[in-house]
Image (cartoon, rainbow, N blue to C red; front, side, top):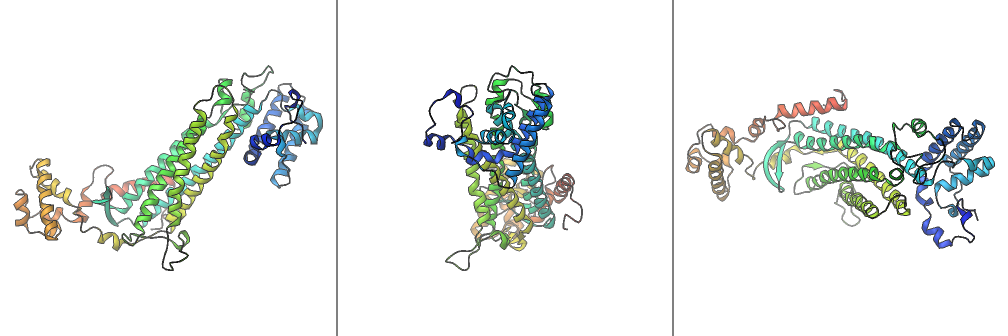
Length: 466
């Protein structure tokens, strides 16, 4: 059985059940690249500061790179008795280079080591997620451009409310994804803070240079307080919150795609590559991808709540409870990245049914607000106009007619200020065109928003697939 690096204090062996319960090798081996990068940087810093010799540092680095090659090739054997990745690497290093390998841990603790590994890992994953969000935005913008002139019902309370351009609706999600990317970008400044040099909790007696180590690893900042450096997991909470918000945004769109693809709506046709069938009903085309994205949103939100509860009662500084940060982090990273990529692919291949959207523009009195606005523009107090139009809608509904199907005489019975030009205000396409207020659904406003998004995303005319 491998001897524990901390075994000098103990005479007896660790119970096998305790080894199994406390081991993190099953999941923290995922951090091997970051752990090796951090160790290489630490060894070079030790040599630069005269704490070990340059020859010792080179021997250590060569051993670490050999371990890296073995891990990349899947040839490295992990011993569960060694508890975690850090101890497994150290044991392998000593086996390769001898006692000089024992010097690598000088002026370092597993506490600052693991904090560094997680920060290095997360920085790379956040950059990757930002890139995926950019591709998702591009897919959405291309879809909006492809169906630019299509009008659909806008909803509140899932009831038909007012007509909007489909592109306007889709660009609302682009705003969400733009904010998601901005939050992640801002978080990188708090992730890229090197904790290496804090040691266990109090710093070290050796003349280390944390700034040099951080520079080697591409981190612009170093820790300011050694206790905080080893116990801080705010950057993980921030990422999990950002990931949860991204998943909520995806879930909202997934819900709409599920509804829109139903027979009752029929607004969209899901691509066959992003749908599945039924084992018993041969006619089914199920929206499993958006359903699973919707379901996985709860999973990521749960990881945020779980880590908050793990941290809420921890005294300073490091506690073994912090080992529980990695599994939710890894799962959240995988889940949100996979969901973003799948939604981008789905949108790229999505087909709209404009005729179904057009049919849904009748039956919901979508231009009732326009009629109230018309009356207000003719001197009727808006609240009075609202009451008049409400009564007129009730009248039309009882007769099974749309507002534009009523006669001027009928309209004037409820709204005396109405004139012959009122019917122009009741046309759906005119209702859309009039909403020229900033951020509105008028074609010129939506064109501005779409062009702005295309410019932000670097979409050329060819890429827009007009």
